[in-house]
Image (cartoon, rainbow, N blue to C red; front, side, top):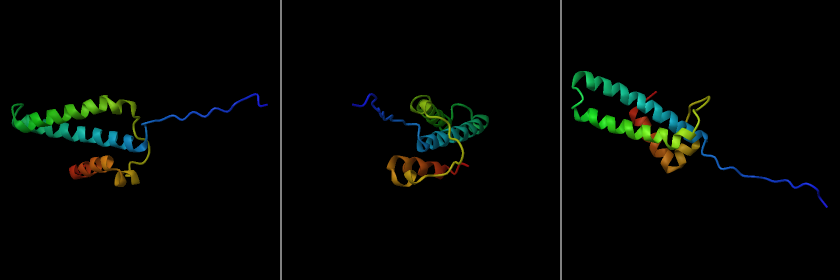
Length: 104
């Protein structure tokens, strides 16, 4: 009769490369938004509709980064697209809009 039992525990993690890459993209988008906001602020002031829209976008992205993505580590190493970005609709859409902004 065995005296020891092998126990295998499966751990579900959301800290995967694809989520790290999305966090990387969101941070880059934030940098771009801040630059555009500064330009609009210098030329037109805070009452500009574009400025107000960018503040809303910035706050929405920050909410995601401080919420779900706070538990996701920063990306390490290469920063390239994986097959998941081509296959999974959510990742594909985020990547599509990120590329439309032509950041990097």
